[in-house]
Length: 357
Image 1 (cartoon, rainbow, N blue to C red):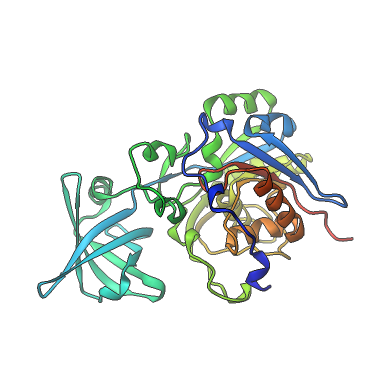
Image 2 (image 1 turned 120 degrees about the vertical axis):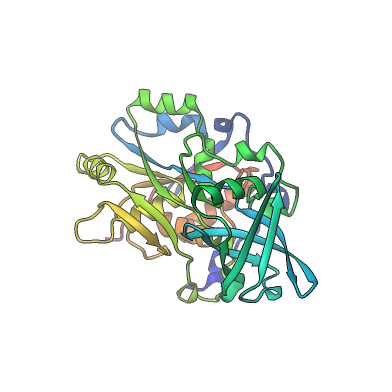
């Protein structure tokens, strides 16, 4: 499909720069496709009433690390400022990163990062297309993690970082309350709406809660530069689903209840784990799954997610689930009704378009 089919107008003032407080006070647009696509305005706190006892929510328990590093490269006395956004760990002492400006880096260059009383050095081991570099650090394992935590910054999405600087509040705001496994460089933002009270209300309703892991990479923010979706290459991300979780979710579907993904990241790892002949099974490894209209969903029955960028892979994904025309109508409604967009914005609960006869 042509990428421009996924474009839409979004006023600049609809981009949320701070989350709702409390988190579950955010609004939520419910989209039920059909002959007469139904759009209904709700709040995140209405989620328990919108689900049935026996349904299951699937959360991504990844934890955001301070993956934005600012440093300097000194080559023969010529110093250049370098920003590096870590996006995938490939070894105890190495990370893939997006560097800026990458044109000032060559293989073999050393970059010094300082902050928080720590000093960290990385060597550019190799350089790839699109500003991606492989950095080998002078520390490894937990020692490297500690140094990154000291010198790094919260990797706010570009559309927020361009409007204001990161501050101390973002360290808690840009993290789900159930984050557990360190490795993400972007938050699974649908999960930012959950509070302990909301989780208790869901439990009281009889809605199961399960966790999977997908370490969200910085590639999630990269623009789609191709003119056709077939020509776009997704960056790989590492994820994991246990067999215990897979079996529980198979049982949910077998009894006729819904598996509801909290966020596109949970959806992507669930669908990656459901590609084989046995359906949803345990999974551990990298996935670069790219979901566009025409995709047949195997693992999930509904999706809770935020509102996404025009022409983005995430807007393509939600269009694959609920239908492009339905989602264009839903987003027009959201703009008209002053919903807040993107990572700190409001939520939507999307149901799938009816299967063709």
